[in-house]
Amino acid sequence: MEGSQVRSVGGGVAHETFTGTVTTNPDCTAKYTISVYDDSGNLVRTSVLDAVFTNGGRKARVIFESIVLPSGASLPSVLSIEGEKL
Image (tube, rainbow, N blue to C red; front, side):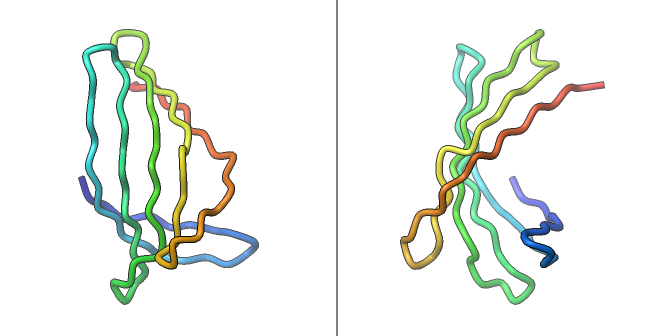
């Protein structure tokens, strides 16, 4: 997977791109590993997310398992995502 995003943290806004992989399981769970890059192509962070799909795959709940900086330092996170296919 690949894409772009705009993020805002503490009032600072940045445009980022990302690439990643996803592993899906028969029990409707998934694990995403995503590498995020700045405008210059430098790695900013790598995130691992766990997901579960419900309602026949129409809904998803995702939680960030880890966020790691290129230095190896881990950032604490309390981030979750809920999505619904319309």
